[in-house]
Length: 363
Ligand code: NAP
Ligand code: ZN
Image (tube, rainbow, N blue to C red):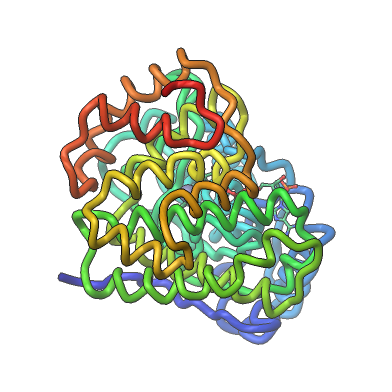
């Protein structure tokens, strides 16, 4: 058993500004990888102010795609080399945070082709700083980056490990987030907690993180139903997400994530929502004791209540049977997900998991 998250994580109000002297001078010039929303939620302004204060140059790339692609990472590599940047800052949800990690890897490997992203090898990367603005992926505490691979019509995690050097976690950036994004990302965090807890790689360390994460999630799940939120509630959901990231950094994710990638690629269903459809079935197939523990921690008397709550949050799963068949076939060949599951996975079990999703037509 071991625990390894070598990231300096500051999780408090105004940490971007407070700790600027530590992170903003990681190099002479930074590449900021972000989307459009960080200009409105205050995160980009805080980061650039801190860089200016430390007299660090920077360039901003604010066109990160949702579910960033290999092609976009290669574009970022070209930009980073041209501008001679020496560290990378990801600001946003998992999309910019993962793109920042992958770009940092490829900038440090200037002679490698795009195929290197999916080859095992040297993980040397430029230093990465992450500033999360959603409460889902936990990418601020994981070494993972997940990219869209158009050539294979799928999303897939890189085999490389790139932990951020610093993560600056402040719930104030989530105050104005859209309701759907809040729900989708909070359900993703729940997916990480459940899939990490029901996982062959789980240890007392990861159980501790998941148990506390689920406790916080349970205490704050009403925010997902209501119309308003306070900054303290945003802090809490973000904390649950960071703890979940620390847990999956050790255990990896499992079947719901493996199935979700097909729905996101083919139908554009947001990541967390696509994961959420498969959570009741994944839990239902687990042993009775672990199932009872998880349901108790997230505050549901049984699987039916849990499914009904998710149905209310994320709606029915409306995908064709052919896509479910493709996801099941694909996952049966995805050893990296199957080996994390603490029960024997068969096609029948995968179909059962799919048919437990709210609104699924396969029965
Ligand atoms: P996202 O794709 O990063 O962002 C979703 C949407 O939310 C975007 O339209 C974004 O706008 C907007 N947004 C972000 N923060 C906002 C804020 N504070 N206020 C208003 N709008 C905001 O969503 P995500 O669910 O966080 O990340 C999903 C990606 O992470 C997927 O590629 C998934 O595979 C990956 N992932 C990674 C890990 C890991 O360990 N690395 C784990 C799980 C999932 P803009 O685009 O304009 O910014
Ligand atoms: Zn996820």
